[in-house]
Length: 174
Length: 199
Image (cartoon, rainbow over all chains, first blue to last red):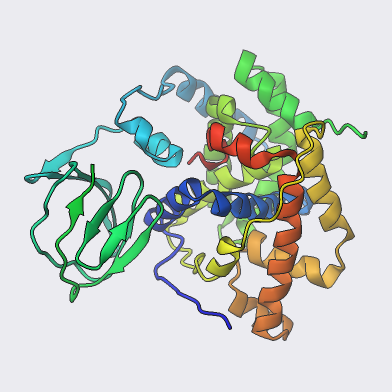
């Protein structure tokens, strides 16, 4: 018997980054994802080539040279090191703007667009978060550490979907 | 033991180490026309396809040092960069990549550790496995992972029942995973950067 879950919208920047983080922190997903990517790479190798514009090489060269000078080095922020590499790469050239609540900090990773958003939540050890609900359907992935609420506890790699009729009171673990 | 030397691995290393334009040109000449075919098949018009190629090539030039031959073959690394750029730029291809979630939670298979297998030989084994697949099975994989069609769409196009589409794709992926795991990739992966995931 097969059970499936489907989420929409998929293949948006937010869902892609979410997916990549999920793949990175669950090793078994990682190798399965590698297999899928290798299949795609194989077909890129086999596909019938399409002629590109004559000036494309010059355009690429110009663009690449400019970018070379403004090359970004990933800062060695110890906080960033705890995140999946995809997220680190994404955040490398950006300033993280935290909104602070009592024991919780929230940063916007991708701005709201077409009803999708991606936020990073930083929960302090032992933080007690007051009972709250959620905006529409929200998917949560634990990137590092763990927390629990009245329904259970969630460790690294756990995915939870919560909707606006879901009330809970999470507590951050040390 | 057969040693495979993928010329593009060396080209990427040369770009990373010495900003070698000649190696960059080799990569551009081989991959740009292929990326253009891929991008135009997945809905980009000519101008957008070439814009995405420019972005992709710029990333190859600036981030070649992120390329890890243990994690992906050059074609695969370049494909993932282009696909991510495509999603970034098009922002409209909304297909359920999570629909085949069950293939992501297969039980782990026993690793046949063999330290002597060259990394690019591992990817070559995947390529040879795919070369030997019957055309109708290969088509399913192509539609799913290269043309990014959902299992439902594939079933409609091929008139093959949905369950059969799923099980055939799953079986092939399991085989490929076995080949990828043959040289202890898991240990490498956990220690190395996820360099195939650059956006």
